Length: 209
Image 1: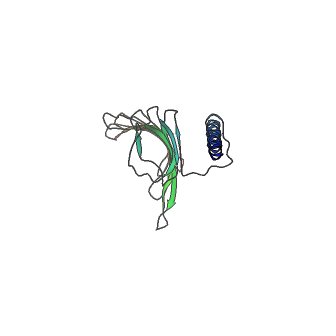
Image 2: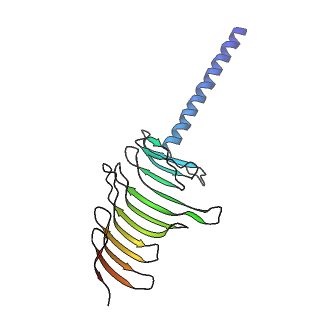
């Protein structure tokens, strides 16, 4: 009789274990294959990856904001902002949306602004929409650059925006990043078109009058 009870308990335990494993597998499949709807998600960092684990996007607060990630390997790089970073098919950073702003101990506004940028493959940003307004800088606009990773050069080529002095400006630069043509409207309404040489010397200037 004792042996029969032990056999019964063994079979019972085995069946319970099998049922638990089946339910666990079924529940896991439901989470993987079905959409899960949340009313609210609170997290310090969210990572989006491909099925093979390749990193494609990170949304993060400041404290957990990553350094520079190239082909899945991270190098320490301090950034004072929070935001979202984009990664290409190889898991290398190729752009992002960052933003920040606070006051220092002196009551001065620092690191205030935002930037949306897109990078060249294995290079730096070539398109950047940026706005900054703090104790050090005050400008906003669109910047187009040439990124040359092999030469470690990233000259600006086009700027469309508002400058430190409050003027609206369209500036076209040469391959060295030097301004060669400037279309400008000052805060007082005075407008001009200026042509410059490679040393920044004015060659000609056109005014409405």
